[in-house]
Image 1: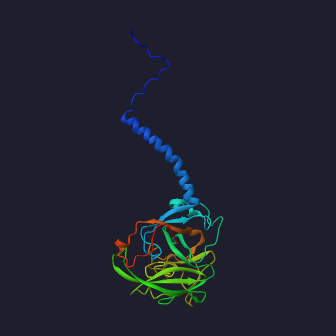
Image 2: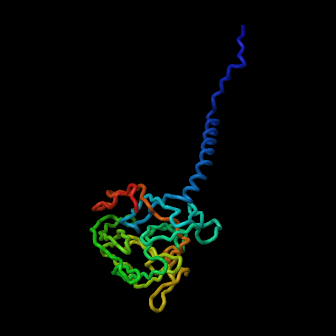
Length: 288
């Protein structure tokens, strides 16, 4: 007698072919990403985003390979707050919303004034400050030199050229804020002698690696000085002979700020690779 299958007995599913398995897996990934990507974009646009340090301009506090958490709500939001630098292409209005004034000494991430590059430097000059730069002398703010205290000497191999250098490490202090800087032996800067009067809603940025940072001290990205050697205007194109790519950041508008760098989460920097002696700061979950 031939057996018949009961209506209550489930039929066995035929095994999936390789193509069907691939299609099913891609569909599952598509559903997952369609949920995850919007959440990621909202989080990185409103709260925190991860930035990779590409140069040695902020040594000793930041090294090439550091992964830094950037606080996006610290200063409010502008079109530059959009993740992946989308603010360069989205026609949003200028200015900021929920704005909060940065503090002197903050390490901030911002859009370069003349080119679509993201930079990270320390805020030295606030709106209305007079910052005096004289080659070979401590920077002065409103007539008071930044206090410098020698800490130690450090020897390491530069990331860009591979040359071994020795640097003097200092603690700098001004108005209750302190940070570390480096002066590289044998390098004296660019013979700059300028007074910068920071315009309203602008900031003057400097790198902590004072002899290896193209920052607001260099006049190539600034407006021409007055007859008294004072630069107090913003918004000019780079100086003649300087391309936008080679010009300094000049005075950085408030709207160009992306956020405040708060923490080195982790790093691929290795003291052994840099032959650093002594090894500079530990770089795992370290506040700036």
